[in-house]
Amino acid sequence: MLRAPVNKIIPQSSVDGPGNRTAIFFQGCNFSCHYCHNPETIRLCQNCGTCVADCPVGALRRDEAGTVCWDPDRCVGCDTCIKVCPHLSSPKVRLLTVEEVLAEVEKGMPFIRGITVSGGECTLYRDFLVSLFERVHPLGLTALLDSNGSRDFSADAELLGACDGVMLDIKCFDSAIHQKLTGQPSERVRENAVFLAKKGKLTEIRTVVIPDYLPNEETVRGYCELLDPYLSAGPIRYKLIRFRPFGVREPYNQLETPSEEYMEQLAEIARGYGFADIVTV
Ligand code: SF4
Ligand code: SF4
Image (cartoon, rainbow, N blue to C red; front, side, top):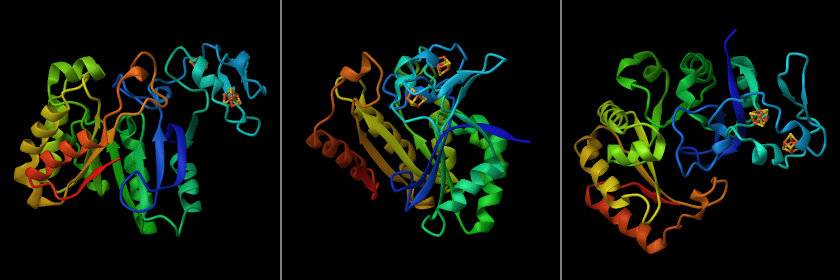
């Protein structure tokens, strides 16, 4: 039976795609972005046991095989375990089946328009996603995928056919800086952006803006130039996200939050290229 590690499920979210959606966050990522706001989703638990003794209410224990187990009924959500974890992980991850995820999705009906799968990097669990999407469509729900763009979508017609749209995280246009920032080059992300835009499946691109640390203007211009020819194939929202230090690991939590004026300058650049739907948050 297919199972995938799920960090959390938000029953109703209004920031993970259009309308009210159930957002499912998978554990594990093949990038390790400096400014990640949820660094505890990057790796799978190594069962090192560091967090067990620090839990103030005994919600963590090792079983006979040495696996660290989490008791959600005892947990008070203090996140001490996440803070002390030396491996960018969390012990509060559940290995769920498609049916178990669906049962949680159904609790949100009829107040949701669809689901959004995110992470971590959700496409690491590609078979699980295809199976989940096939099950949610008969319920009248749409299925969106939020990805770092590392998977070659042009080589996976089944996954693309199963989802209604992709929201792509655009970290940086320049490949060398992207490599330094995330651990991976940017070429595949660019290729995916063009491929998805041509197919009319690129619902949204999103860029975190950090003044004096990332070449923000170059990234916005680079992607706008790249995608401008395909805007007629389907509307693409550009979401520009102000860097905020919450949840970010040291020393990157010291980076600067951009001003509203700077965000507006970047939005204006995108507008100049014909992007009509620009959101700054
Ligand atoms: S978040 Fe839950 S499991 Fe983690 S330390 Fe706090 S009470 Fe324990
Ligand atoms: S969550 Fe982190 S600290 Fe806790 S057992 Fe797993 S790897 Fe170790």
